Length: 299
Length: 200
Ligand code: SF4
Ligand code: SF4
Image 1 (cartoon, protein in one colour):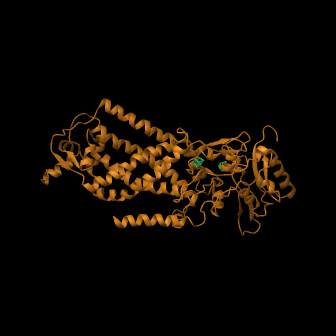
Image 2 (image 1 turned 180 degrees about the vertical axis):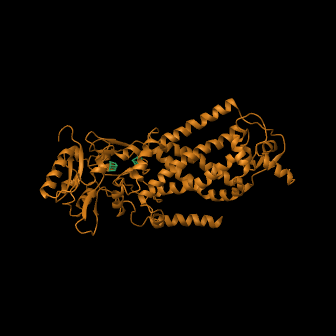
Image 3 (image 1 turned 135 degrees about the vertical axis):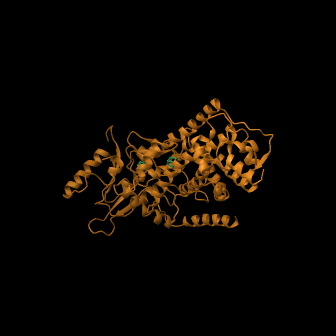
């Protein structure tokens, strides 16, 4: 952990040193950019970004913001939440370390998601001081997330690989389309949680990197240009495109995650707070894991 | 200029001698911070005999300006004469306009220790900004407003070879045609950069 922090701090230092060098955008590179824009042999990232940003990104975020909660409202009204007994035995599911890491990521997300939305719909908020503050907050909240994202990846990765159960889980959409409490095929984490895990960790790293590129903008990492074969401005354009697309996906699944933990499974959120899950909840929603624990004599 | 004047820039690459005077004049006239050059002289095909030429670039005040299309806070406004301006008090410094721009025109003076970007700055064609015309605030944020006084933008005014021209697009195109014809070996059908900026 210490080494990891050291690495983070030193890489920040390296990027700030790079600032001292010549501009990678408005210096000699500017020429290359002007020549390249929209030309047949160029990457066409400039016109592509312009087209996507002016027509699609804000709309996609709006669909997530309105559409996903609407689907959940309908689900809640028609099928309703799963309620499990909270008087039974508890099963220890999340270590203290896992909970702390998760909570840091959770708090970062609660800042990152709304501040990101405010920027996407910046004109609705009139721009200026308020939206600028949200932009800075978006950047600040990235720091704690960037620190915990890799440890979070490591502590859970062994439980996250695809399993036969996951296919079965997907076929019945996790049992969320029925009110019955039939055992659902899933290990410690179900297919939905696994999808969220991969998107939040790997996608999260992508978000941090693309976001940081846009935030620092005129940094000078020659290696990055060599590997990608892109000019600095095209790296930024690619970053903006990727950040928006992955952002749409992450916010959508983030809403799903919250709905599940808070509304769809009554009291499920306590699991990550106390570390204990309700026995009945595990027995039904994570039936394979339950059987395994039973066999091992842990319950 | 008639009623339908559509202001455009044109830099004659046969005349430009890479003296950088326009860029310096601009920086001085608008008291730009170091590191920001609204106008810059670039040399293309450097070292290739017969093909090398220099030209001066700044914001071209594009038709259907891409910057205006992507700004998440809608801080751009386009004047009737085609000049593309923006409101720095609304701008959040996100950088999107730069990604959309074919000319690398939008720039971001760094303020703050962590290199955070300030509001975007670009060429105003010497037409100031949304503040009261010729007010101290307008000058502070956007530089001189020469257009309001009937003056030519400072870059074109000082260009010693009259390579850099600014004015109604029709009039500029006429001059361009005359110059190309007089040289007798016209190659380009329209001035360099006009395709990207004003459409084919
Ligand atoms: S040159 Fe760039 S900044 Fe100027 S109007 Fe065109 S897109 Fe906008
Ligand atoms: S940097 Fe400012 S002007 Fe440019 S797109 Fe962002 S908010 Fe708009």
